[in-house]
Length: 192
Image 1 (cartoon, helix red, strand yellow):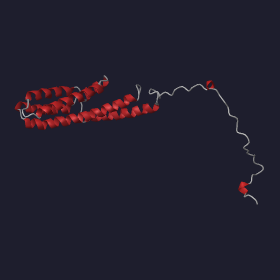
Image 2 (image 1 turned 120 degrees about the horizontal axis):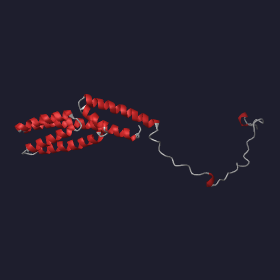
Image 3 (image 1 turned 180 degrees about the horizontal axis):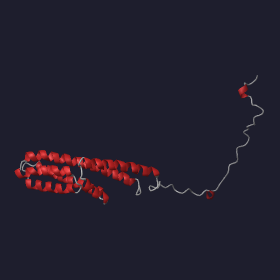
Image 4 (image 1 turned 30 degrees about the vertical axis):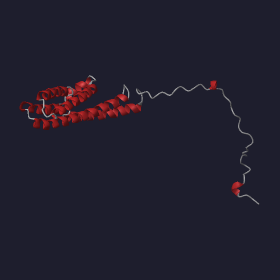
């Protein structure tokens, strides 16, 4: 009885025997000091983060150019804020303050007897608030809204209030996009 050629060992090949297992080496813990803890990548030198920050800066600059071109905010006013590093803070304040004012005007306009003087005072406050970021379209809508103060015409105020609200929401959205991009750039590190 013979085995097929695949099972026959060629005498020229080395012999593999399973005689004894290799020796086990024993080392003490002192021979292997602990590895230093892994630290996060240095944000200042990480090329990947620098590239991400550069791409975000391109997006931010394009977004800002669009805001200026569309008249969402006044370029001179907003660039001054960006140069002194307060654009994000002022934008957040504008968003919060203007939202509260528009909400207060809405509440007053829903009353059966409208306090036109209070509505006008809030409108003037909103106009001052819009000037902080150069939100020209909101300011123009406020001026249109104020035109109905002299004639105390609630119907006209309600229609123009919708315009004020719409212009505010456009500015708010655009500023929120800008804030998000600025935060993403800041997350890439101080030198990004």
